[in-house]
Length: 372
Image (tube, rainbow, N blue to C red; front, side, top):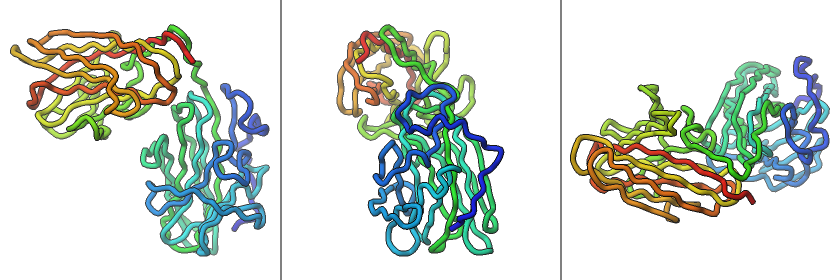
């Protein structure tokens, strides 16, 4: 393991994080992950894992005071030193032929961050390499990645601008490209807040169309497709066709998050066996009025949708209504709901006439009546 690390002179740190996560986060706050490390895994929101597949993460449970302090698993070199050179925000990790290290950090405040991530290859002369993945929410939701391949001491670094939510998990996965026991890398990771989201207040209105981006799940807004209303699959294919759409297959299963942005209006197409669901992660606990509006679309003739509102899981229904009639028939309702921060709100649009290329338009917005 490298012990003579010299910090990069270009990355001067405004050390507002020296006191740990206690102070309120504001624009300009810098969080150096090394500063958060303790002998208790998960403390200060910082968790060290190991994995064989990048999906199923296991927390390290064995801590040793060896040298600078390390988390270790087994005897083949799977370990992480959270803080080798604290002054330089430098740590190190060892991986094996079949398992590697993941760092997780629970985001302390919503907003926009610049994530600076730096790696240095370690070990004897010869080729080494790591594929570094950055994920938000779950380890499989990759939002950035880079490779560091070369001889020992080869350095690669990048900065990623990310929209984050309070309580969301940020993951850094260090997958070895050279799969041998006792492979090593050094790492530096820090977050700089460029903007902090204001707190939700009584009277705030959240129009879901305003949150839509080409990244599914960003800003807490998700678009799914489902065949049974229980198992939801995220759309993964985004096309810039017209107003931008999420699409699956070629039979008309599609969601346009923002057809007319100024009117908060989107549209969805369903098929004979699958339909669209919208999910939104509640940003603050309290009481909301959910306004939900639908308009039937398509050629003249009967159309219809059964709209369900659910909280927590897609099966926990808290409201529902039907829209049945000719094209352009409109139905709308307002539901008063008690919600918790981080809870998922779902709107499921199940066709009453299951056939390909059925369509509806939708408007959804939340108004905070009170905030916990």
